[in-house]
Length: 207
Ligand code: 2DT
Ligand code: MG
Image (cartoon, rainbow, N blue to C red; front, top):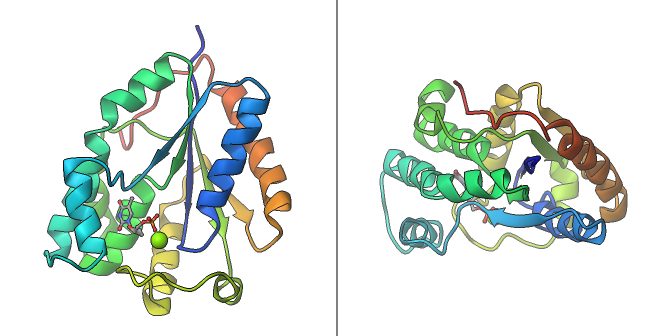
């Protein structure tokens, strides 16, 4: 049996990731392609609960500790990710390891290599859809919710880190257009990835 694809959306806050995740899931369901949503951070787990309190500014923690919690939050989902892919379910994921490294390189001031290390060995995405928005377009979207990192200055630094993390399975999608136009491109790339990875083994980050 062929496996599902591991499709990840990355980008800054207010890039439209959640909207595109929902639209892609619906389009795959319409085509009878088994697909499931996964969101990181997964705030429903015990570790996710601490991350949620940190983001909501209810607790203070060193940035390095938070970085490791974000990574642990992915590790606790490793088996379920692997099992879903193996049974043929495509995963549509809102943020993953690149968000971990891009945000933490800014908040900890540590090299990207240090930030990427804890995620090494996790299942690797088959496709990363990076939704690009200009700071101007970002400003036209609904206001910040007041969570940590939701500041223009942080965002522009994180954008630079994201660019340094891009590999050959990344595509940059102009997300400054209408959601339908963005979705057309997204669906195209997703269907190709689903086809291409069917007989490929699941990759691992940095291994
Ligand atoms: P949302 O805005 O998508 O709810 O994310 N973040 C996320 C990190 O700093 N490291 C990570 O590993 C992940 C997955 C990005 C909440 C914030 O958490 C940041 C924004
Ligand atoms: Mg956010």
